[in-house]
Image (cartoon, rainbow, N blue to C red):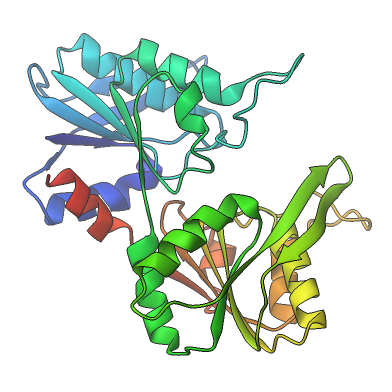
Amino acid sequence: MIIFSLPLYKYLAIGLAKKSSFKIGNCEFLRFPNREIYIKILENVRGKKCLIIGSSMPPEENLFYTLLLTHTLKKEGAKEVKILIPYLAYSRHEQNESGKSWEMKWLGEVLQISGAKKLITFDLHTFKNKNVFSIPIISLGTVPIVTELIKRIKNTNLTLVAADMGAFPLVKRINKNLKIKLPIAYFHKTRTSQGVTLEGFHGRVGKEALIIDDMLDTGETLYKNLVKLKKWGVKKVNIFITHGLFTPLRQDSAGQAGSIWKKLFRLGVQNIYCVDTIPLRPEVKKDKRIKVFSILPILNKYLSH
């Protein structure tokens, strides 16, 4: 198999090639003087199986390059093109709402038209996505990573807390994978134009909690989780999220860029754990309280089958 990667995922392509017989394909991502994008393939791919490590997250050129690379490989005679998008942006847009764009449906259709046969991702936001996508989706899980993390924490009094109902299936899979079952709980969340509201909590929580969610975007949901847990007497909190966007808000009330997720540490969070489905910005990467696990072992195991 030949791996073609967008520049931001070069580290994953190198890691996969080191642990397998896969070859890194040569290609160039270019622009004409008028800024139009084009791609040059520097490999003979005719009759070969290809894997693209692409992206759908902003800036939009990432998705454009992924689609164009897929189409170009098929045009050049590739036998099969699979797409690995570690973090599937637009997966929160799985509902068909009147008058609104349906990004998840559209994304599947343009990938299919471009020549993709299968999409591989990590911890899909909701399995409803599979029902609206035009090509098969393989959602690889981070359960083995979280299981190993819980072993490191070494506390049988730990409660696993799902940040919302969407994270609850992931928490159940994690708990099922543990030798010693832990108590689990979850928040019920609604999102309005005014922001996130927590309407209920199910289960019981002790003095120590591990909050689990599929992503940290601005951090608003996790922040409101934490405020509630601290009021209920939780003393020690760690957070595990799959996709670490760590998105700064554009402006706060004073007109300055701000980050809700930074407030998590002020409320006593010890560490935020995530996996490398998204390259972290330098500002985030230098914070030693944010610890990153590699998805390479899970990818190698899946792709070697």
